[in-house]
Length: 87
Image (cartoon, rainbow, N blue to C red; front, side, top):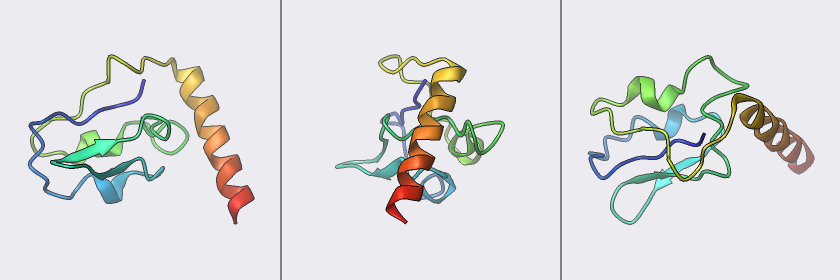
């Protein structure tokens, strides 16, 4: 399941640096999460770091990107492989 940032985001800038996959960036109005890169921190941490630091609790699971923990682990492995190839 990829996470998403709702329009309740206050652009406080605390989530973006916490994302180990660089999935969070500034959108037209507020921060957004790229579901192709979001693994809910699977492979890095036990819990999504952006959710942990968000002061307004505006980062739920995206209903459009439902994935199992196994799928998130595979996505993480693919991202790490691509990162290693780019280095």
